[in-house]
Image (cartoon, rainbow, N blue to C red):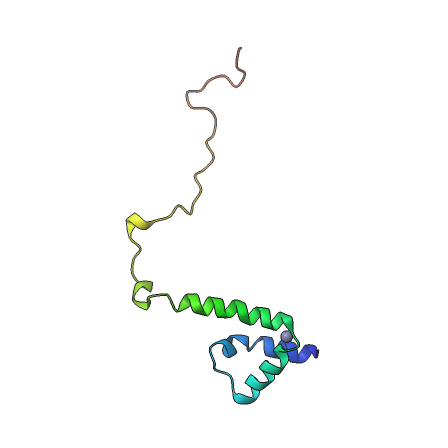
Length: 92
Ligand SMILES: [Zn+2]
C-alpha cells in the first residue's frame, strides 16, 4: 500500500461517505479500500455517525434543553469530613 495514497484518501473518507467525491477520487477510494482495512473501518465508523446525524431534528438544535431533562454532568464534590463533627478516632 502506498502511504501517501492512504493519507490522501483517508482525509477524503468523510466526503466519500456523504457522496461528495469527484468520480476519479471515488474510484481511487473504492480501489484503495479493497486493500486497506484501516480506511474501510474508518468509513464504516463515519457511516454510523452520519446515520445518527440523520436522526437529529435541526429545529431542536437551538432549543433550550428542558429543565426537566437535565442530566447530571457534574459530579458532586466529595463530602468532606463527617457530618456532625465526630472524632476522627472513634472510641477516644
Ligand atoms: Zn487507507
